[in-house]
Length: 356
Image (cartoon, rainbow, N blue to C red; front, side):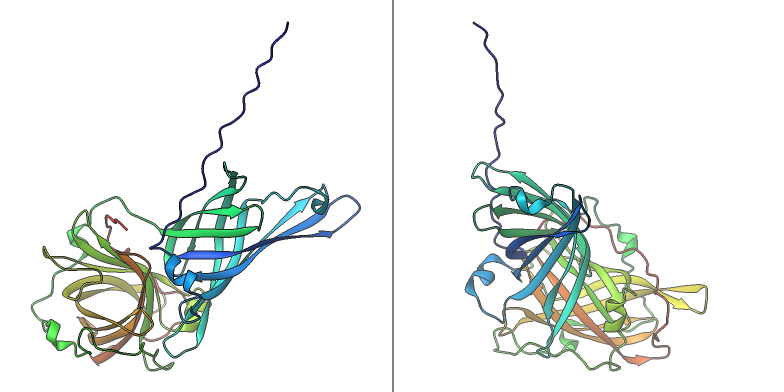
């Protein structure tokens, strides 16, 4: 009697869902176009909706959700329509819509999304991947329902393992006015307020978009992302890195945290080849929840260019992080930044330890 062993791989369980982070849910389609006698072009497309948390997505509230789309093109010499439906990993490109404060929507492009599919124990697929957009780099986890072809993925924005370097956040210089928390005038906490509207083009000096994080390992808050002189520069990818942050006192309360000791730095282009490092010696920020369940952001700051005001929106995507968009306008200055045709270069943001 001859016996043969056959090893059956143990499949992993479905990836668990995550509530307090950005979630995208859509249907995966596969279409095939014959390109010649033997080869075919296979197009994978995901169309659906996203929100800053699973609870918001499940409400179906149009104010809390927006559409998104991913596509992936591959060559299939087997004329894929006759083959079993098996999702194909690889590089996906796409976009998602983001609410603006004035009621309009911005289309955010995504060109570096990578997805991998692995069968799980429930006859579906676990999804892993990574990507980046105007708000930073992130990893992806999720599942694909094989019966309904519904893809549900979660974004986890990148964590940096090193503690912050104090030298990156310069102290307030003595020759510049020190701002206080009460210098920022805004509605009181608990007051019912509408979401702030974005300022008109030409009325602000810069726009920044990044991820604001509470870092519990070193008791600090940091923000890193991209900044540009106009929204059009974001559309044309004329952006560079920025960063700011502050240390927190014990018992600081829940995220986000009002504070008068935020500070950071960036580089500003001067002439054809020269750059000047600008340090934001002090940034004061206040956060007030609005009727869309996001936060209005009010602030002031000071650097060598002068005093500036800040306003924007924080869309919370967890208990300790959120997507921040800020508009900066100089109120007293001698040399306000002006638009250039080339991408401005910036100093690296502060290095942080992040727990989301």
